[in-house]
Image 1 (cartoon, rainbow, N blue to C red):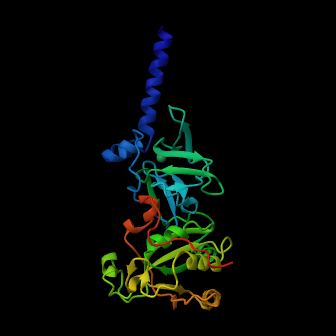
Image 2: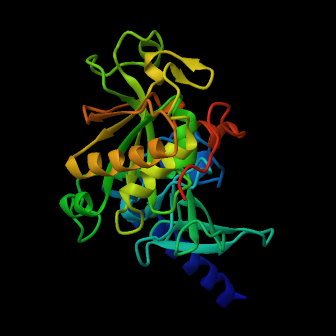
Amino acid sequence: MQKILFALLALCITVAMAEELKPWTTKLKGLSAFEKHVIVDKGTERPWSGKYVNTSEKGVYRCKVCGQPLYRSDDKFNSHCGWPSFDDAIPGAVKEIADADGRRTEIICANCGAHLGHVFRGEGFTKKNVRYCVNSVSLNFDKKMKSSGNDDKAVAATLKKAYFAGGCFWGVEYYMEKIPGVKEVTSGFMGGDVKNPGYYDVVKGDTGHLETVEVLYDPSKVSYETLAKTFFEIHDPTQTDGQGPDRGSQYLSAVFVNDKNERKVVNKLIGILESKGLKIATKVLNKTPFYPAEEYHQDHYMRKGGTPYCHRRVKRFD
Ligand SMILES: [Zn+2]
């Protein structure tokens, strides 16, 4: 009996000391009620509510409690699930635990045990076939620390941006995001003189901007020509006063090119379409500054469900 008591006492002392030694104990006390709800009580933030759902800046996502680096921006991808998604974790940084119901696998910070979210396998989102679905509120983003050997220049060298205006950007974004090799599509504005325009400024039609999408793509996986062909097939390039039911200068068809090569590709495709008897209204313009639209316009159809009212796919190339 004495032995057991002694062992219990020793255990209590050890636990008490360990608690005291953990440098993040005070950090836990400083969490807001909502942070505690997620990080300590294993709650889940509402989809699309977290601050890191759509971030694509380079850097490292750290544990909010202990600061341990957990995920790299290089492994972040757009899963359209409403939470930041990564297809890999920094080795050893994240621990997996089967949920009590045995259906899902919880992920926690391997250093301090903070609840992060859940991990899913076999969904086919990326080559690695893993999705770490993480609550934004469990993370702190640190953009100063380089996320890997790739510096920003290397990333800029591997990924390219293309710009297309084909009417309501929700529809163009919807189809462009489906192309393999496309990393991210952002709805925004281009072509006008007004800096940082808001959606309602552009709707009035007097900013000179066109609703435009910025397509971030990996040229080793998809060519500019494929993107441009898709663009000509998902909107009506012959309409001269807008796109579908959306009329006005902000809905006109245009391709904003980065250089002579892109211009050549687009002009070649226009030539092919005109040889088939189509009178193409699409303008080929030089790229000007791109202004992303407000957050609530991004991924419209992924969030709201449904398919575009203004765009559909028509095969125009052989
Ligand atoms: Zn931690």
